[in-house]
Image (cartoon, rainbow, N blue to C red; front, side, top):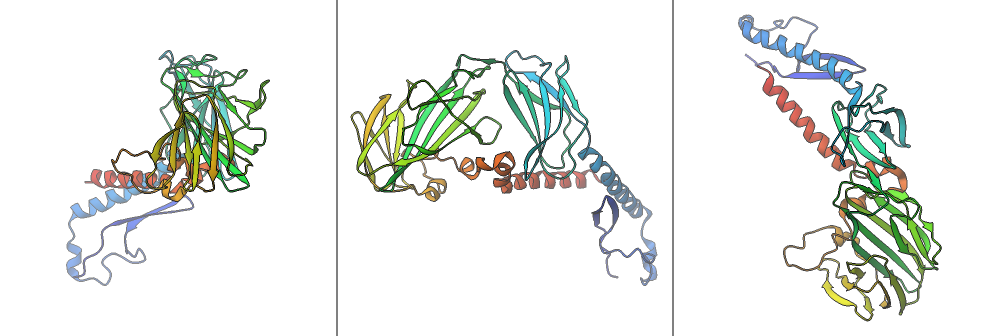
Length: 389
């Protein structure tokens, strides 16, 4: 006797759900064409089938309701440790055209909020809380319910407090006629207050007079790279950037090109004391300056890393070359103790293109998101099977 496949297939099509045994033909009785002995299937087995079908039907009915249920949660003030009232909470639908605002509400006296207008479709959703001049984000994966969200916000201050520049790095890539400059500042804020100074700017940096196509991108904790426009200051060639430095680690990347003939002099200036500036020279490029220390060669790209403690120095740059970014992003340098460019070129960050906006940055790392959602889906299936008697 040929054994029937008693596994279940869940079919979803235009909100219609059909649960049936895999390969079963409902156009005729189950015993049609079978031997007489087929009628001896135990009642216990039949009950299990009926229970499985019922669970499948229930799953089909419940999942769409969960996917479009109200979004609720609590806004917590990380500075005081108490619920935060009157914070503006906005739900965004993230699509190909960028974030689309769905609904905005205010958190209540107990910090709780409810958003009733959920976003239809399968795309990710973003819940954003605006408080005291800064925004804080929470991403909701596609198709997942969003109840009981906890979003932490912080009070802001125009004083740096615990926020400080932890790293300053510059990569110079001369080609004989121009030089491409990639400059990065890494902020660390170990406190519980957001540093936000719209008037004076939270970052000041030197931009040479000949700089062209200057772009500034900011990566805050829990967010994606966002394009920011620097502003001029009364000092010549000194720019300021207005962005809130949230608790955690933030990064500012500045990129520009300028006319440059090699060999030539390049001015390096910083307005932050207490840490040295790292200069990166690709293979084929050398640097010389008073007080410049050779920290060694990065093993994968063969780039040389220099350190300078002076806030202002003129560097003599000779040769031409470009960083091998493919080599910088791949492989493992091991435990040799040699300098690497991992802090200069984080692989995931370089994958995200901030120029296209929030949605483009999310789509650029879609395979990582799909992998995470796939793991969650497999876990759900395993738990469901385990729960079925």
